Amino acid sequence: MRHGACDFTLWQFLAGIDSAIGMTNDKLRRQITFEAARLMYSRQESEYYRAKLKAARKICRGWVPESYLPSNAEIRDEIQRFAWMYEGDSRHDNLRDMRLTAYRMLAMLQQFRPRLIGSTLTGHVRHGSDVDLHVFTDSIPSVTGVLDAEGLFYDVEHKEVRKQQETRIYTHIHVQEKFPVELTVYAAAEVRTVFRSSITGKPIERASLKQLRELLEQEYPDLNIDDAAEELGQAMDRFSLYRLLLAPLEKVEQGRRYHPEGDVLYHSLQVFDLARDEAPWDEDFLLAALLHDVGKGIDSQDHVGAALESLRGFASERTLWLIEHHMEAHKLADGSIGARARRRLMQHPDYESLVLLGECDRGGRVPGAAAPELDEALDYIREVVRMCGP
Image (tube, rainbow, N blue to C red):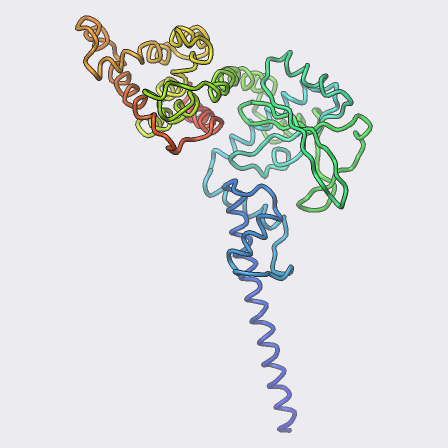
């Protein structure tokens, strides 16, 4: 009897150890899932596997058994919890607008038998998500020709990917819309290929134009799909122009005496960042800060006139007035402006905004200062428009 009791106690002891180890593994797995999701939500990592390994090394401080690592689906679900927590109701609006953007692009590219895939289709979107499309053609110029005809701005990327000891070159076309659109170009013969998800290992969900329209009608029954998609496209035309004017400024250098920080784009992004701190919801003011020097990429002799000519019809009169007089703001500050001109400016309702723009302009000249990326700045102003109206 005593021997049997001892065996039973030992069995309980060993079972308890197994249970404790299991609980420890579960806890570690949850911690790794959370950290990997945080890395991906904050865009510090873009690949699930790398995010897992980095998270595991940070938490366990060394080698981690494969069984401790979460699945891609677990991380994706945790990312969605981050999105719900930090983005709130705006996530619903963004998902709708991303699907409308996809609808426009599918209609535009119909001849290439396009399909919508990814988070825009499944609903697993978060801030910064792309609209991902597959297009099927043997002629990349035919795709870019359609984009050119529509007046869209894009970049073509050829990316080498090695999988299972096989190397393949993928062509991606990145289109600048309200939400970034990535077209992955496949050969026409691959249209019936079954692509598998890196998250689930199952065939990916994908939708044609007809199938996406059915989804939109089901999810948003009160929405006029065609009118909403057209309105969304028109609203983005000006942001495409802004990017077209701003991007080349990275190569426009300035005199070091007044601009020790370097190129015009870096300066403009510094000024925008300072303006955002001062007036985070003032679209006109933020645009004036970001765009005040775009003319330097067009006409260095008259950068103010060149900016006004290129932006008229794509910015408000208030934004244009601030850009037109931003050089006079510096004369106001150093006292070199004439009395009559000072009185004229002081009588304008946006005089205080002009003075503030001058302060931001002079403050945005710091070598090595932190500044947002161009797309981050444009995305911020888009969000102001969405939240507050144009």
